[in-house]
Structure formats: C-alpha cells, structure tokens
Length: 64
Image (cartoon, rainbow, N blue to C red):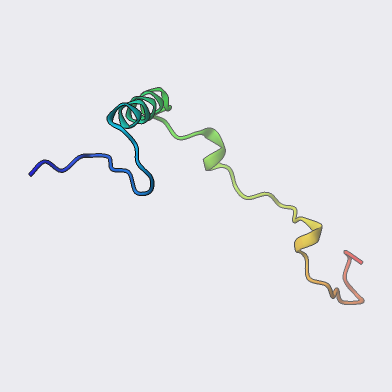
C-alpha cells in the first residue's frame, strides 16, 4: 500500500494540481533562510497598545 506524502483534505485535486502545490512548497522551503532572523532575539517592546490597557487607572497613576 502506497501512502502519499501529501493528501487533499477537502475538495478534489488532480495529480497535476498536487504536483504544482508540492513544487511551490519545495521551492519556498529551499529559499527560506536557515538562520533565525535577528528580530527573534530582541526583547519585547517596552510600550503597550492603548486599546489593550484596562479601563480603570488608579488616581495616583502617572499614566492618567
């Protein structure tokens, strides 16, 4: 029994369509950088987005 490496979960793809998607995925994987990007090693930003702050701030808060 031959189990394919890629299968179609939904819909009906022909062999040519599966081959085209496989070629695109392999080309993208080959062109991807092997080292991690520099931004992954940076610390988190020191600021926050205003819409994510809680609605109430204490009266003595400097952010008031």
